[in-house]
Each structure stands twice: as structure tokens, then as C-alpha cells.
Image (cartoon, rainbow, N blue to C red; front, top):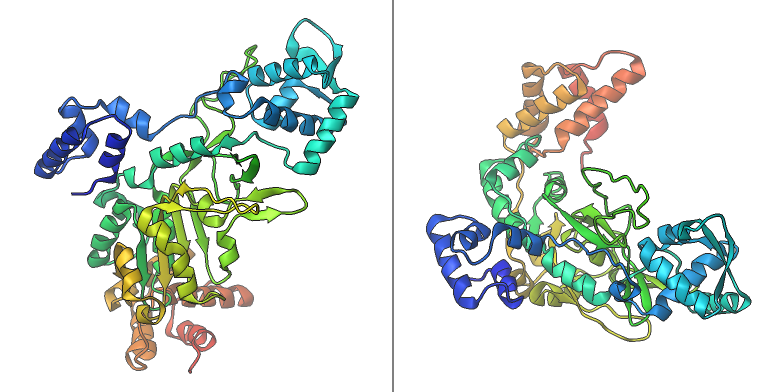
Length: 478
């Protein structure tokens, strides 16, 4: 029985292979969580388990603790100071570079010894009150550093630290159950069969292939469940790979989670930060792309003018969910896209390439979801489907489900639900015409009714007359 979480604990030396086998045997007997079984057997405490799989980046107190070279950080500080007209305070640089005060203070002392900076003014004995300025030598080095890379911002995190965090924050460790599925999707009308498939699929933390006719809720289901995943992760603002910088944090994708009790910095120059400020505490990301996806969007993007990289979209989805919507309608052939995913899905690793030609390996950890309304046989072959763990067909709604969706939409819009009008809609526009019961139709039709009522300055009503008017503007006879 394969268990990626247990295998990771063995690989990191927290438990032995024999202990894992014993724990898995106990888990099969009472169907409990692996962490509970390990704790009951005395192999690993609950605190040890959570500390390993919910790592908090330790605050670097010295330059050596950052994992970056003194020369690299010096250049980054000089660039930041140069763009501030050559003068700076330690706290100002600390905020710009997302480094603790003690690290910036140590850097400033080293740079002063190398005659790169000098103290311009000091209003007291505290280092926080000192204002520094770049010397001529410091300006020349800053200009040289800017010619090599225009990146100025949070100090990056070494690649090895990022990879280790990816592994320990893996999405497969997230535990979800039937109650979580039902609670997350409670505002949607979904049959028991579908609920029974969705739970194991998302609990696996693996790839999912959703297929079925348009308008049946495939995208909505995946996005809702992705955003409902419990817990948080730490995401670095930028990475350092062989001297190159890759910007990873994206505020449009990564939503920060504030600490429960904001801290008062007081007189503590390190601000008593709870974790390395180069990392942001965030919800697990959900990235969705559709017909606009091209192959180059899956590669590192190098800006020749600024001379640093932007992480590709699937890398920004690390430890979260990546949704490829409208699969098959991209500008590139589906098989070209699929070939790009085969190795990451099968081996759990990806290999980005720098513009210098250097390839590097990173863990590929995400729930990858393919959503399509095209026939699977026209898009993928059996070999690829074999690599996707869960295949879920989303079908048209039943009449009872359709009625329930219509009732809920009316409630949201503040319209009285009328049973006779609902039956009129079903009979005249679905039963007689043979039109399939698509779950998105009730919402769209009611919105037509609301739009017309607003234009006429009337209260919206669900009646046979308003149904006819909405249908005339919504349905197209092919």
C-alpha cells in the first residue's frame, strides 16, 4: 500500500520502514489517520508530525542564516539604496529586502568596512537612528549590480530551501472527509454519486480529469473545493537559482493569512517576527487558466530589460490546485500540452530552464485538474489517462435537481418561487424540445428576468410570461 506521507517521513529519517509498515497495518484495521496511529504506537508525537508537515521558516539572525552569500546580499542592498537616491536607514532597507534588522545591520557594518557606505547622520546612539549614504565606490558597485539584474525587492530564498518547503507542505497531507465535501458544496445541487467521487479524488491530492457537457458545474466544483482546502502554507517572495532571481509570490494568486495576534514591535529591532519575512503565510493557491494557455506560459519568463524571471503559472500553484479549464480549446494542440505534463504527473518533479540553458529540478506538488466538455477520446490517449488518477464524468441535471437549482436561484435574487411557472419552463423548453437540463440555465434565465424587470422598473417575477420572454432572449435554435 503506497502512502506518500509515510514514505516522506521514512525518507527524512523520522520513522523507519518497519514502523511505517506497522502503522499502515494499524491504519487499515481502524481506518484512523496515520498521524494518530503513529502517536498511539509511540513512533511520532502529534506535535512532531505537525511541525514537520507545517514548517515555519526560521528567522535568520545573521547573514549566514539566509543561505545567500554576503556578496549577493550586498549587491541587493546597494541597488535598493541607489534607487533611494543613495541614502537609507537600516529599518528602511530591512522593510524593502524583507530581512530582519540584525541581518541588515551586519551587512551595513561589512559594507562600511569595505568603504561602500558611510554614516551620514546619527541622532542618537541607537543604530536605528543612523542614516547611511553610498560612497562613490558604493555607487559604482550598485550601478554594476543593476546592469546585471534590475531586481530590487525581498531577498530571495535559496532553491534548496524552497524545494524542502514544497515537499513538507505537500497537498497530499491535507485531510478532507465527507463532511468537508458536503459543507464546501452545500450551496450547489450535486447528486450523491458525484459527491461520492469528489471526496476520494480531492483527498488523494493527485490529478483529476473532469469531463461532461458545458454548463454542468465542472469548473465551479473544482474551484470551490480548491479554495476550501484547509490549512496554510509559506510561499517565498522570490527564489535564487545559480545567482538568478525568480519572482514567485503573486498577490493575484497568493492570498495572505495574517497571524492571529498582531505583534507590537516595541523596541525590538527584529520586530519579534514569527517567521522569516522573506516568506508569506498564505492559503493554498488555486490557479485557473483556460483557452488563453500557451506552452510558453508553462516556462520561466525572462525579462531582458529587468534581467530577472517570473515563475510560470504551474509553479505558482505549488502546494495547491491548478485548473486547466476548457481543455482542448487552447491555441496549441491538446497532445502538445499533455506531453508537457506527463513527466511532472508521473514522477512528481518538474524541470524549469533558465535562459542560460541551465535546468534545475523542483518538486511538482499540486492537484492538477483538467476540465473539458469535449470527448476525452478526441483529446487524450489511453496512456495519458492512465497517468491521471481520477476520471469524473459530470452529467446533465435531473428534473428534481433542476427544480432545486431554480428555487435556490430565485431565493438569491429575492424572487418568489412559483411551482407552476417552473413546470411551465420544464414542459415547454425542455421536455417538448428535448433540450438537456443544464445546471447553469436556471441562473441565466432568472438573470434575464431580473434584467428586464429592472429596465421596466418592476419587481421581478417568475411567471410563464417572464419565462417566455427570458427564453426568447436566451435560447438559440441551431
